[in-house]
Image 1 (tube, one colour):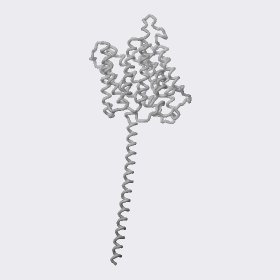
Image 2 (cartoon, rainbow, N blue to C red):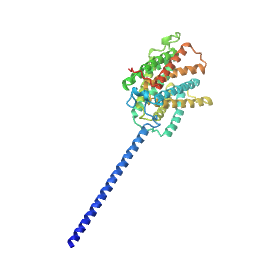
Image 3 (cartoon, rainbow, N blue to C red):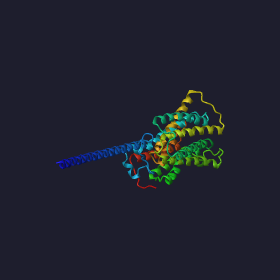
Image 4 (tube, rainbow, N blue to C red):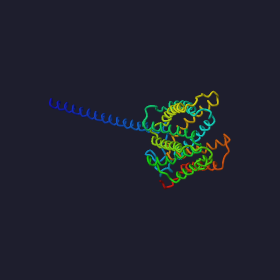
Length: 383
């Protein structure tokens, strides 16, 4: 009997131990499953947050719809993209052209102020606007990637701006304008080499019509010989607007390469700092007399000019995260046609037949590019 009782106790102990082991195994399995589920959920949440950061409002809201870079869609899929995505980059560049025309009209109206003064004061207001924008969107001022590429883009863009100003001051206006707006040709070459961007017949047609339109509006002396009695500047003066056009083309390609990896507002803020320093250095180097505007109108116009510059740089950065560098630069030629319209309508300058034809050619190229995007037109042949 004692042995039977001992056996029963041992059996009960083994059963209890087995039950405890089974319960522990189940608990451990349930814990591991719960932990795995939590880890999976955390990974999915992290992925969604990362995706949102990389496509958020600081970088343009949506994925790029241009062509020619690793972050863009292929040309064959352009027609299947939503309409808004197809025309977003071109729409930004049209707004940039409108803002640039307003800025140019303001500078023309207050031409009694020095160039350095206009650039410095408007850049101060521009930086104030951008500081509020950067603070609102939480864009980083220091902690951003591709710093070397960003500051190279800022330096080259500022050089192109000052080269354009120098060309307008020291060359006939038509010569400087026509040579500066050869930049789409250089952009097409540089983008083809470094970004592998391809051109289709619509791009080439818009490039040719845009260049012809600029020449007809600007009427450069080296083609039309309109001012035979005036002294011809030295030949090396004409290298400055050409080098400025190359710098502008390089700026477009670098900004396209940066894309959405750096906030457009971050780049625009640093661009304002470069322009302030550049305006001061330009003013000191030119030894122009510095006089602050005392009237209400020029002060207001300078504030609006600063707002236009901030508007243009931000939208240009966003446009180049959605559109090919060559296409964006071609749309920028619209500045010349809009400036001609403002010159005739606002300043009362008589319109000439060749100038009207030139404005029509530029707008024709812009319309063709825009329609090819809206309709998702694919020519098939690319170069």
